[in-house]
Length: 305
Ligand SMILES: Cc1cc2nc3c(=O)[nH]c(=O)nc-3n(C[C@H](O)[C@H](O)[C@H](O)COP(=O)(O)O)c2cc1C
Image (cartoon, rainbow, N blue to C red):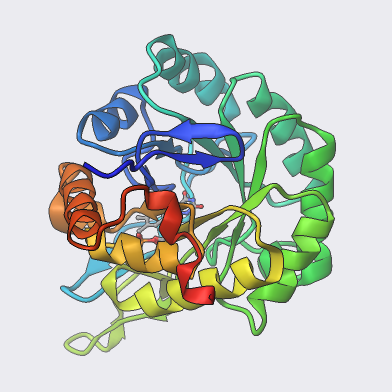
């Protein structure tokens, strides 16, 4: 068996697969179950300072090629994370945990970073990328380099934990935005959050989602994710959680060659179940075996040389 262990911001993961934010990441037992099924680490659903209701149903729509969602980041808030999810997960911590935080204002990002650090996550992931949440300017912070850097600087000042910034693919030059965050103190990145999307039910002549538009995820977005990871790696060389459309072990290898050090999977769970993590790890291992790769760290960024 190849050595699949990777180091990410000084944290050891037994393999590079991690549960992406928003899928099964609400309770300690569901997070622990994903680790039992083979994931090398987990990410929580986005945590707000206070409860956030989210959007009205229907919020999800899927085909064999892609998923559309407009869940709207529903969450019980920081208090539940601090009193239930983290204490229960950390009691018998089976694998590293990444705390994903989201806010509508830069001040709130600072407060959240301070509060969530007390929960002892291994890494803090800052979600400035969600297409369903808008800042004061009417677009996600991740769309403007100066705004993304400002959030990064404030979060950096409020925690000693490793900080990674979750980027949006819905921009012209993702490398430039990543570089601004790196200069403001980011330790790494997660790329990508969802693309924008919409589906129309032709029988009723209306959008399928109540929110009209939503986030596009799943197999069809893999090329966008691979390109984003390639560009962020080239611009910063910092560690990246490559996320977007990853379904198989060979997909994991591909996005690692673009520069990912960890690989997030969310929509994969809807196609292959939580057990998909174990299957993906076996597929990765088989690829390494066939290709004489003894240590998976060898392939990170291989497509750049
Ligand atoms: C149902 C659903 C809910 C999501 N919720 C969150 C969230 O709370 N926070 C976040 O940062 N990303 C969220 N995402 C985005 C995923 O973490 C991921 O970045 C994106 O779906 C692309 O990866 P995938 O194709 O493997 O799903 C969500 C995605 C889906 C499908």
